[in-house]
Amino acid sequence: MGQTDHPSDADLLATAEAGRDAVAAGPAADHLAECAACRARLAAYRSAAQLLAEASPAGRAYCPPRAALIDASLSGEQALGRDRHLAACPLCAEDLADLRALEVEPAPGALETVRGRVVLALEAVTRRALQLLEATLPPVPTPALAPARGEGAGSDGGPPVAVQAVFGDGALELTWSAARGAVDLRAVARGAAPRPYRLELRDAAGAPLESRASDEQGAVSLTDLEPGCYRLAAFGPQRAQPELEVELELRA
Amino acid sequence: MDRSGEHEPPLSELVARACEDDAPAQAALFERYRGFVHRRLAASRRRRNWFWLDDLDDAVQETFMQFFAALREGKFRYESERRLEGFLVRTAWFVSMNLKDKHRGAEVSLYDPDEGGLRFDLPAWADAVFDRLERRDCLRMLASAVAELNPNRREVVERTLLGQRVRDICAATGRTSASVSGLKFNALVELRERLAAQGFVERCGELFGLVAAEE
Image (tube, rainbow over all chains, first blue to last red; front, top):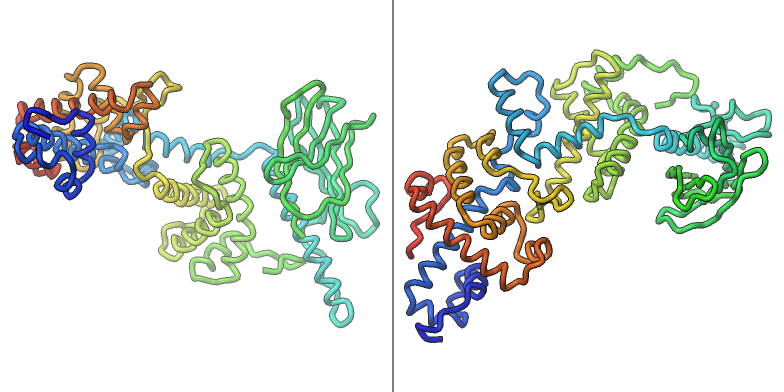
């Protein structure tokens, strides 16, 4: 490449970003060795690129520490500076929005899902402990949390635990019981919840496993579920998208 | 801790014992609030699309480790359950943000096409830097020089400043790689020349590790 055959801007960019060792061995090396103008442009580019990298807000170099974003004890001027920065820095604004999301109590569906997992785990542990200790030790005391029982439970069951999730203009009440190492789940529409509705049980990845339509009482029963992670979707009449989705984690 | 039938100590006592590194008290607090923290993280992950938070259980564990460390260091004094929950939430936030930082790398883009383009006002941001205040005037000079570029070059510089690479700019603008490369090269060369004309290297070069353009 002669002195008159200047590399294109795209080639110079590639050269600039390739690193100095690569430049020394690359095809533009001979030209750059002869052309002061191209060398100057290359150096100017590198200088500006370094400046942009140093000045980039993505590096958080000019942001307050996260603790300062939520520090209510900052002095007037510091607080003003922090607030001005928050107004101009989308990264810090995003962090604060993340905190606000954490401060919000989740919707009942998600809340009850975790409670269900805890209850079933306790019950299953109790049952296993009873089996192990049957011959030689006193029975394990009843756990403080009442085990979940569906309708028609035996006399040794505690009060039924029903959780409700918002469904349409009403609620979907979920009750469950664990027996024989499996879980029976029953859903009942309450209030102005859609009727009829369809309940779809999905695996953790979202693939459908079972689909049931509600009966005349607005109820659906899913029995003999194996412990694991599921998703439950409820569809109102003629709806292609679910109006309720909850995650279930049934542990043995 | 066996909660079955035994009288459970008051929360204030549990916290006080946990401050002294009492393992049963810490275990009791963990069991009592594990679900609370898990729910909050899970809901926030859904709501805020925290794709980088792939192990919720791990984040919960880390939250409690940080929480107990804060108790030992006297950073939290029990006043009410509500304040305790608030402290746990903030601890979970710090843990989550640290995980977000690990995923951030060089892939941050603050250019939001859904919001009509740039959701980042460079001059306002330069005015509002919180830390490294000695660089504020320099960043204002930079913002001013960027504003003087023609619209196409300014856009490429702003996108580069916000972490986008050539291929990202091509995808966002629909321009070819050769076009964006040429724009970027010429834009940065012009930017450097404008800054040099303002005396940027003399005033700010040391702060930003810059040397004279000529080599």
